[in-house]
Image 1 (cartoon, helix red, strand yellow):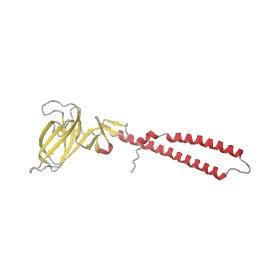
Image 2: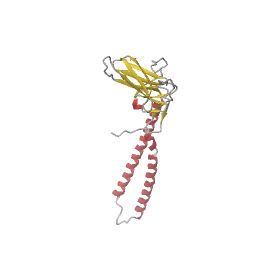
Image 3: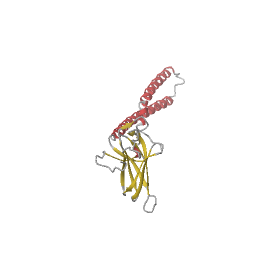
Image 4: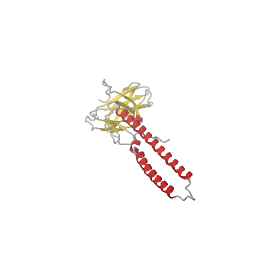
Amino acid sequence: MVEISPYSALSNLGRSSTDRASIAENFDTFLTLLTTQLKNQSPLDPLDTNQFTQQLVQFTEVEQTVKQNENLEKLVQLSAANTITNVVGFLGGEVTLSGTESELSNGSANWNYDIEGGTDNATFSVLDSNGVPVFTTSGPAPEGQNAFVWDGRTSNGTIAPDGNYTLSISAVDSNGTALKVTTEIVGLVDGVNFNGDEPVLLIGTREVKLGDIISVRLPNTGGSQQLGT
């Protein structure tokens, strides 16, 4: 199935105007040649009227096609403008998407997690870009969705530099059986990138496609569970 992006199609707008000018020029040339032929035709061998009538019909059909393309371009412009307006509406919103990598910025990196059934024995490890643990903590985790907020402080007491970090969670039940863990990323949309074939949201330096978003809401001004402090 071919997908048509109204946003990327903007780069082709204006093409039908050029085609229309070219057709008009060719049509004028055709009429000039036809008129010359009619003036200089032999009375004993007149020009076949069916032939040039067919050519006139073909020119008309092409012109109608170009007009349809112009109307489609207008629809594409409207669709692209609507898409841009909708995307800009995400600015300042708190979005949630599946994943384990979040950005540490201004002393905070945020994740949501859900441990199936809950547990009294869960281990949370924050890994740097090389997969090396920089912070680890453990403790109980209730059933349902919870928030893990890391303040950037490492296990040895230093402050980690801003950047992308991965949250790894291991959890077992009372019998030592591993439990299913689901992790989501939460972040504020602070920009939109329109340089590609489709606009993407920016959460710090991270690019997020619209199709990856699970939910969006206004930022929560209330307190959060601080497991990373």
